[in-house]
Image 1 (cartoon, rainbow, N blue to C red):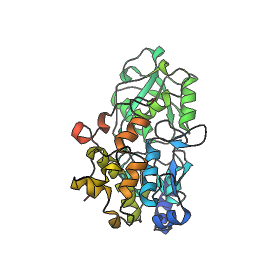
Image 2 (cartoon, helix red, strand yellow):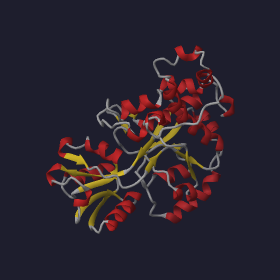
Image 3 (cartoon, helix red, strand yellow):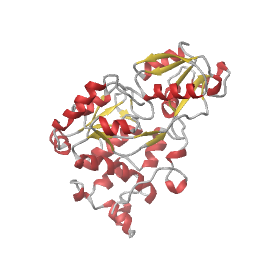
Image 4 (cartoon, rainbow, N blue to C red):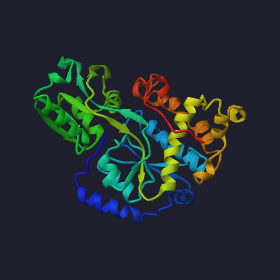
Length: 335
């Protein structure tokens, strides 16, 4: 989800003061023994806690990868559930080390909130979900509809632009959390939900009868989602950025959680550099990339188990396929 803060002044002040937060996040994480990761309050496939309180999802795996790289152990992560309204403040204030919470990369956020996006772990776009009983096949049939929406997000802005451009009107029914939004939809308080398509698929499986709802084909915006860190700590920024890049590079090189150990002795020089080297340039151990892949898996593995066709969400790779396979996932080389 995508948040435009309703308290811009407060956010701006926090952005300025973010530099006063301890600049060496890596040392802080080492000292406390874990990475503090900001996640959603519960979004299946991306960041969601199971019945035992164990967090899992594509965004969670980014945090686990960072912990594997920085601390040598993907399990050394603690999670802070955050609403859309809370997430940037938590990062700016130093409450969390990394925000990995299906957050859209925009110029405004990069340029005014004192934060840096460290890459894209999911290329998304805003869409619409309706009940099948409504009988519509296109968003262009929704003139006058009541729309369930999470308050204070860029989703609202995109929705207003789309309806205005197409000469349509709508009524907003706003909620503070994604759980409240899907409950409002299921209770019949609105005709449709609009959000990132990834979130719509995640919310649909929370319905008592998921087959009662469909995601319409229209995608009305670009929503590159990725992990976020505070500005002012380039070392930590690089660690987070290259942890994500390592997952993508590993998939391209054919290195998986199952074969990582055996690939340590590969005669391929690119795999050799990937598996044991370059760590000193990041201020971490040379086995950082090996730790990520052996403990978390490559990007394709993470995608498949969390949101792919082998998961309840059953989302195709689409734009999130590797660049060699027609997608947008492309990482700089580790050399």
